[in-house]
Image (cartoon, rainbow, N blue to C red; front, side, top):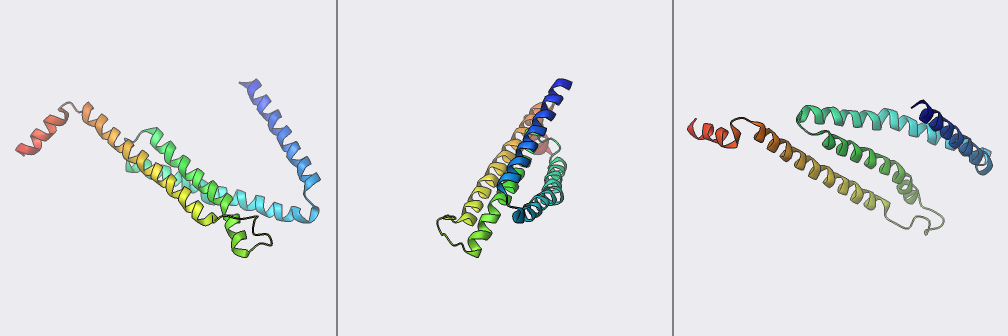
Amino acid sequence: MKAARIVLVVIGVLVIAFGASVLVTSVTPNRIGGLGVWLLAAVVLHDAVLSPFVVGAGLLLRRAGRSLRAWVLVVVQAAIVLGSVLALVVLPEIAAKDHGQKNPTVLPFDYGTRLLLVEGALLVVVVVVLVVGVVRSRRTRGSSDPAGPAGSSAVRTTG
């Protein structure tokens, strides 16, 4: 385990060094400030918006259905993360297209519509997973009930 950590730290340091060398050789000094602002905004958005949202969704799902399987929570949280990261990547294209560009072939698509379609598809996947998770958890609870489904329906019809 210790050797794996050392290897991962060395790889991380090498990747950072490569990134720094690319930054120094390819970004002009007057653009480094904008890059710094972008990086700072990415950290703030991640720590102040995305992470609390994912944690809050997880807590709400845990409270809403304590019997939901862990994979349901994982799928929902993954969809939230994917949707958020996709939005963060596409929003600059939407803003650039709204401001207009000198070359119309640089941003040729309607990125807002495409973002909504992908986010909608993610929402459909989450809804399907939640429905399947709830149905499965009810079936497992129903089959583990000693009276079984017939016993509970007999109680309802006589009571």
